[in-house]
Image (cartoon, rainbow, N blue to C red):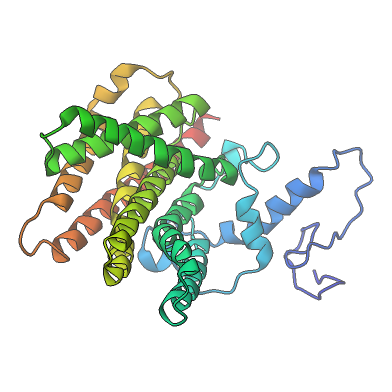
Length: 352
């Protein structure tokens, strides 16, 4: 079916052009006027769903990263999670999604960072310094968060709420960690750092999940990643500012770049794992404090604490090989929980 406006070839049965949004058929029924919004969301998402793969292989999962995508496909991702665009569980695909927008977000952030860097390094204008710190701190954590956003198959969390979790979850978890550190005073070491920071993030993730009654494993991954992204970005910005105030301009960039490279395997992944583990335990049940003491949750939380403690341990030769190994280990567990989350969707569809 070719669009009369842009001559784009659309699949049979669509009511709107996937390229320009032109409406093919007049709707004479008494349906709500918002049906255009729903149809737009449904049909733009048709082709990506068809291309999904059952096998969790890297060349399948990331196969759409290097393909050309229309602007409407990106818009489709940002309008999910509303009353009109959240699909029923029977309509959710339990096959592996193929995320791609996260790569575009990273490239855009990289280009913006390069612009701020040019303003400081080549023109000597310090007005660009705040941009260097803010964009540099958020670029990789936010891009990683976008990956989890695209992997949230239930599509039941609005993007504005994800941003809310990044900002409020990030700052509140940092404040909680500071309180815990103040209580510990001189008993601060890699183990206590791991316990304190992961506990602070876990408290915020559980609070968000409990309040909104999110029940899917993939929801927990996304919300945890949002809190972790905020924590990681604010922490990096703080370290970068301290480097700047110490008079070591070169260390400012080293801090941002090094922490950016390893950000996907740090706070973002760790908090995502904690969130997924909690949602796996809670499910449709009402929150109970005993849930955090269940083995399914504790084994993941303890693993995250151990990885975090090893990450901060000043072992000779630990960087960068040890951090690379810990990043890979974290993401192996992430993909295992994504698989568990997709399996959970399949099981819930059978119950409908």
